[in-house]
Amino acid sequence: MKEGMTQRQDIPGENRFDVIVIGGGSAGVAAAISAARGGARTLLVESAPMIGGELISGISMLGCLSTRGDWIVGGVVTELLDRLKPLGGYIGPVFDYRALHLVCFDTELMKIAVMQAVAEAGVHLRVQAFFCGIETGGDETRVRLMHKGGEAWYAARVVIDCSGDGDVAVAAGAPSEKGAPGTGALQPPSLVYRVCGVETEPLLRFVRDNPAHFGLGDYPGLGMDARQCAEALYAQGQPKVLLRGTQGLLKEAIDAGEMYPTSVLAIVPTSTARKEVSINSTQLAGVDGTRAASLSEALPRLMAQVSQGLAFLRRRVPGFEQAALAAVAPKIGVRETRRILGEHVLDEADIMQGRKRADGIAKGGHELDILAVDGHRHETIAEGGSYDIPYECLVPHGQRRLLVAGRCISSTREAQSSVRVMGTCMAMGQAAGTAAALCALDDGWSGDVRDVDRARLRRTLIADGAVLEGTL
Image (cartoon, rainbow, N blue to C red; front, side, top):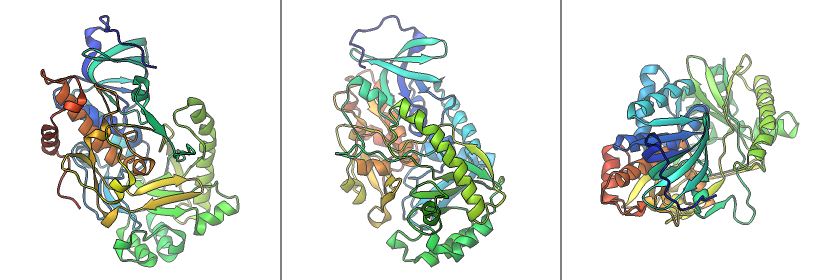
């Protein structure tokens, strides 16, 4: 709940910051690094023992390249990927010959890269710290955290909600929506796991010889049928493979009770040295990521699906015969919960038509991508291009010193299904962190994040490597 409007004088100096970022996932990491580099004293708060979120779960980065193959995200994303190269953890862009370019990397080495970048930027950290209250009003915003050592209040000129669920914005009184209009249905969460000892050539040969089992050739602009896509996937030489629950081998296994119901089973390379891939397949309907009880009840069922999925892969998919479980993600991956209502609501037309804006602060290029356990709505953006995200999507209604970034930005359900991926979340995080620093360090600032100098914000983002212009 919103706690009140009283100015707190008892917050010690070490707990006062220019910018506080709540949520240390991909958006939060980018926001904190950007704010700190902009000169702001910055605190990054994360409830888990380690920062990184989905960056360290095992999945690859989507949203960095458009379906056409153009890079549409830079800045902090590029820096993290560059940090992986000398560590031997960068695989690079891989095309699934369906519609997506994924940037693949070693999950374990990404942990090092993220921590290096945050530390070198001078970001202050509070891990295993839970947001549990907010006060607004006056010349600062106060947040209450519960962490090791007890409860404490912290203050900042600007707070950025990168919680994924819009927890901070809702507690402050911002309006929100959740799930599908009318029904409240939410996309199913997943528990990603990694498998080592996978032989790539037999796997890709199986795809080449049996293309009907796999998701291939969805984007008409490829000009290739499924068999041609399978040949190209084999020639690419990376174990990026998608089985669909509505066709071929995976459908047969689901129908026979050998596999749990799921719309997809996605295989993505994570380490060439360890012959390791990640598996994104486990799914449960009816899980609400804003409720601890719902997530807790889902966890044992998702873990059981990990065991069932690995057994299926070993038994039915060539290349997995000697595969061993390497790791399970440290938390359930949530695709959809709240959407904070802001000064602009990004909608389906914005993304599908690839709308460009003179005042855009980030780009997205991932397809419209709404998953259900029994289906998958996926549609490619016009001409395989990208769209621009305006700053107003980061500004919640009725809030002056609060920004949001990540999958909870102001959007419709359809648009959220595109912006929720890591590349786009990090681009939005970089924009939010940069804007927060510009506001917090400006002695003449009005106290309202709407009044940031938009032209200066764009110039700063471009100077820091963000991609805001020059893409289809």
